[in-house]
Length: 602
Image 1 (cartoon, rainbow, N blue to C red):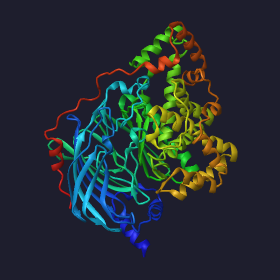
Image 2: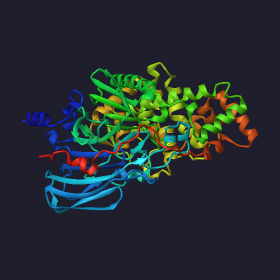
Image 3: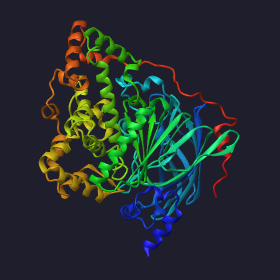
Image 4: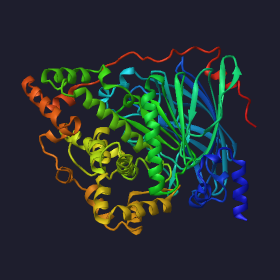
């Protein structure tokens, strides 16, 4: 009887085709619900004006109280307000409960709000609320899309996830999002501005996006072709089940390439001038999906989009369920960089003769390997945190080190790079080495994000050092046994949310003996320099960044100029360059009027 009810509910929900074969049944069983329509769901209507840099929206949110106890306040996250660097904004302007106790919207923090109910919502009862909201986009300078200009830009914030730069628009988490629950308690707090912006439980989305005509829109859901609404605007309809958040990207200049891998339709979205890198990223993502599917089990989604984006804060990429962002600076020729860091390195290269001996080629190689590794890393995130959910604020130690390790393995299998060890040196160890070069101290990686001083420390310990836990474990049990353990542990917790202690225990029980011992050393200890063989002077760090030959030449030149690697990489900051890209045109109507062109949902 339950199976029949589940099947009927699945047939009624739009966007179920986003999930891979058999995934819906696994999701329902793991989440502990009787049918898919008990998932948190959002009907979103959004409008965007790139010319005004504004968006507005309305949302019908349906939430079943599965906490096991009465709830008097239903918390929401306003994660787009996390940035302290003049980022995009999100403001709720109205809220009405249409099913359940009367509710009043309250918000005392920029990143949080609650629907305060007049009476408790009992266990198993349903709340339906309509919310109105809107906000602004951050304007990102074109210098952000400069590989060398990113150095020194590791500020905390939103990474440009609600922003426009060079005509590339990202609108992520730009809606009031139900807070996730863990152990019956709502998880709020925002992670202290370090690490991933948000995390959540799996949900269902039915979305309509209104934009000026001529914009290409891509979401992390199943998208329909845009249709004109009149008055110079269009609507894009999208839906999806089993994702943990909603994001869309838009540009007047998007180009797209597509490839089908097994049952997964993959699309790469890029600017025409970055076509070569966009096509290469599609190829690398396809190879990564094949590797992950073979190693960890069936890919969770039937679609995956890779989108070129203007990212900041040191983020080379960003993952969402069914869609990944790749920083545009990884798609560009470093020889054309215009940042102060690029100018300084060019000068040093000319003085030392390194420019003639391969500085430009070295930067090209670094860019290409960084792009490839980043693509593999972000695609690996489709297994965690998209499939294997994690609390990104409390337990970032689970998904990020795993994605680093899997990315190195995937690139090794591509045959275009080096071994897993070499790929980890360039994709992981360099983060830790650079941090130590700048005077940062080693420490425990397994801690909540609010316990890190800044993103630089977070990147060093979580991305740089912690992945070597899996290397140590592989050395102990062998690659085949580790792969079986990873596959088994992911299957056990798929579609749920797991903490670090449970994850390590699951690896042990799945055959990776010694997981706890290695986690204690690599994740909880401070043995990085010893275990990773770094010298206190930073020579190894510079070598990892530039290669041994160029590192020696540049160190000699820096000594003559009276500067050091630490001074070079610690004092320069990126400069501002006006935004480029295709010009935005002002439509005949405002974002508010755009939304009114849509019929009200029944």
